[in-house]
Image (tube, rainbow, N blue to C red; front, side, top):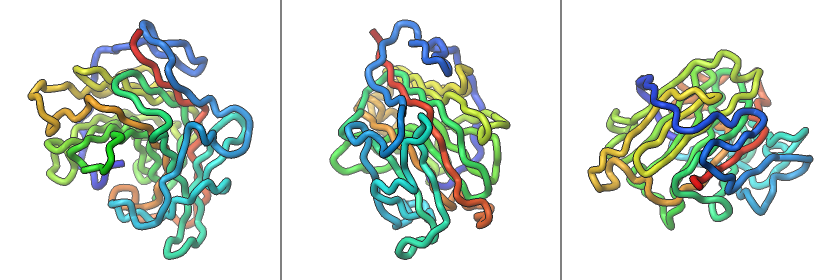
Length: 268
């Protein structure tokens, strides 16, 4: 989940795969290799998800404490994963939330990743569906980051897709990203997706491509650290360097991100 942002460039690319959509058609030329449909109710599947825990700001001056398997913050309910941020004191933090990770339980190099989700609303919300590499000790941004979807509540309806590398990251104003406007992100479900190959990563919203980042073939990790396994992360942050740029509306909580399903496909 990246830190302070600068204006992103809106780009388009050729669609690399068929839109699988709400009904879950398998993209052409691909096979399903991992998924969670979030059926039933109760805690998220422990065979697929763990938790990042803590309230130290997460490098972004975020305000929430990420709890460990607390059903108030993470649960399966009505056939959806609910990641809920709440205004409640936990230690030195004024908010709680959850950050689910598939590290050690779902990791991939290349493929198509899709999640059908409905986002929280309001100033101070910062939901994300994103990926980090599975390494012993993360060196950010050298090891890379793939942000499938981010949304900040002070700029409603604008969805961002971004990569971070040593050469391209916010700290030097060179991060690579695109954005697309989706007015009903907080009231309707949409499919957020990437298609990732050795040559490029492309972003899609309901099957519509809106950004593409190409491998420049320089042969080093400074520009392309994406030939290694990455895992998934779902979280809702509160405030922070980006999400809190316009402050936090204290009257809107709780706020939730709901995920209908997540699916990972590989080329046959």
